[in-house]
Length: 583
Ligand code: GAP
Image 1 (tube, rainbow, N blue to C red):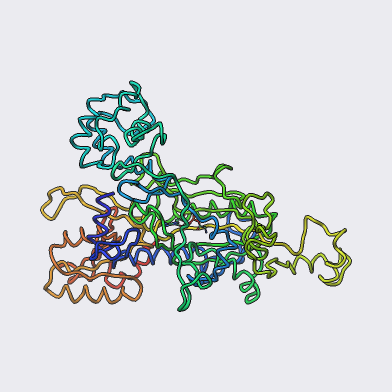
Image 2 (image 1 turned 120 degrees about the vertical axis):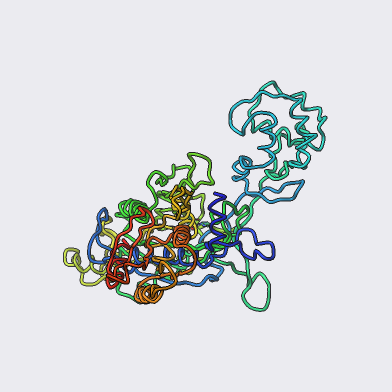
């Protein structure tokens, strides 16, 4: 991972935001190559999910054909949206503070971070154990020796370092689980406080977990009071739900259909970490797919499989990808089924996977919340949450967000013995067919992806080292970024072999012919081998070289980054050749 992070900075994929001022934790800037990579990922997603989607044909695995459209909503929205959606009351992480160094930590990350903690590694090396669930034998002398020497610098907050003669040390049994040992070492007085959780940074004791809302607050207008307070959106999804009726009324779209949106989201993550994986500002690519309740399970399965294939199609290997269905106790209160597409990011422990995208069956939760008001997460079936005064805790818009299926109704109305929907509604209470309601609150299937996480996964997957001969035939380690041509920042580099004999002129002509079609790079500096290496590192899939033979027969070499195969192609065929190879 260190090698990848360093390459990303060196070659201009990613920089820490505000680096010249020491950086701002959890914020990342995309450099000249990174911006192209991320844009290509977003473009591929939009093209594959929205503009390239065939509205007329049922794709493999889908119950029927469906329509797709898009939106681009604001980042700052009406504050009531977040109250009704539940984010205002419930979008929390549990957080702990170190009493010694004052660092804030997300409770569910603490033990993962302990695995990477420098002081835990130092202690483990000195005393011969690793952090695990296994029982270890205690050698008190080694523990105390470490606390008086290396521990002083590595873990100044640790209770045992602050008092290496701690009397409780003698109370520990002969063997103990490493977690309990580390917690004991962080505890001054177990009888008073119980075992304390240690800080992964300094070893200090952590406070009890408390709730921390992840939404960034801001104020609209000049007066900074509660009335004007609103939030930077923590997801793009809500903009789609609150525009559901606008989309229906302004287009001829019919259920089933999906609305896509790509945009920035903001979460004041307690412990942003693992490069861009958990950032405080990031981009999401979300689809809210509206369908009939009866077919919603089928649509959920369709989207789960469809999204998984998308990542595979762009080059993520199936061994590092997995689709994980959430067990019932992990589901959000509104969810009727959720699956995560997960990737084995290299910063995770062996065999661990991190979320790339979530696909959730959200039932009618979202549209109902914006109609009626915040639903009570403890109710089942979900009911409007009331405040102490018996009124809705957070009042919804009151707008009717149900869907009237005019086509189905028209087809059935003679059989129902009515002339109009109004007549049907008036008389339907007793004799309506419950299996075929013509007006219903659609169910929502939500494939929700992160553009930054996708970029990170493609970078992790692409980073490879192999051995190749240099210009003098000596074997050298080559770093290659094996990015799929569709998402590679530069599609093709054009080189004259040498900067003379008319070669640059021909190379520049080829560059100009390719440029209207692709992002192409021209380079005439240095040995050609070094130029190839630079392009390999940036993920450029193809290089065209003009050499002595070009001047005789108007052919050039086209080199493939991955196979290293070189073939000769006519100068006039370069555009067609690269187009054909783009995949
Ligand atoms: N509307 C549903 C929703 O927002 P989520 O699982 O919280 O669901 C969806 O987020 C995706 O957004 C995640 O799978 C991930 O790719 C991305 N994401 C979420 N939090 C992120 C963060 N702090 N940094 C980078 N990406 C994040």
